[in-house]
Picture (cartoon, rainbow, N blue to C red):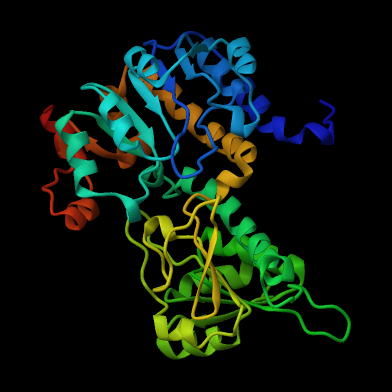
Length: 404
């Protein structure tokens, strides 16, 4: 097949369609795609191409009017793919048994959830409340968090996709705020002949950090990566041909690195838990004036003491003379790319649920969905969330085995 480089964003879903279009599933699912209304969220979980795959497998898809507008997908595209356009969220929730969101439901959206609904969405642990959890538990909603889905290969596929985007964008964002137009000191991220490059310090050595490092190196910056996991640091050094400088994330090295940093990318995290707080306020106070912090894990509480969540409409604030960019949903700014990425991960899981005959049957077999479930049959099923909110939990495998 000849590939047109101008159509590269379509290649992933075309490949997905060829692999997944087949005979009807064992059970027809009623899948709802409401319009995102929170936190400047512009992404969706399904593209029109993903909808066509689901329709071909016998499922029904409902999408709220203008839900895809901010990701540049029209209602007509979804309609042509076989989706039914719902005029409002209430109508969509009533027709659907499965709700696909990106951001967690707002208070108004929680009211629309009924017993038996299956909720697919991110959880954003840093902003989640005990009341939110209790509402889902009381309503007997089965809830699957994108950030918890983990396959047998120990990978977090949704998280990985979004972290790749976040890491690349974090450096792009920082480069803008180093410029005078971004109220920065007027520094170019990559140096030129006779002028040294900017110094980028990346906290963490996971996927976000790797893609941030790759992008920063591409700009020509000097890159330091810090973590408390030596194995991850070694892996990243080898992956990047030792073009980065690594150091253990202890107080001494952190303080020294931050004093010399032009950019700090906060990417220290533990999957499914609150981010570790590595940088103290005094460390930030000792940073260069007009240097830039991009805290990419603010949705998990942030790894920098002075961070607080911002929005795409009001993205930055200054603390101790340091510019802070702390948006929880950075990939939303490239909503179309991010929607393709989400779609390519989520569609196979939806087909697996249909093939198994429903979520109860599917989580027996599907490791990713079983790990992704955090509320099931009126029980919290994640120990980390239980500790965070002091709510009792039951192991998901025990719940399945006991057929509660």
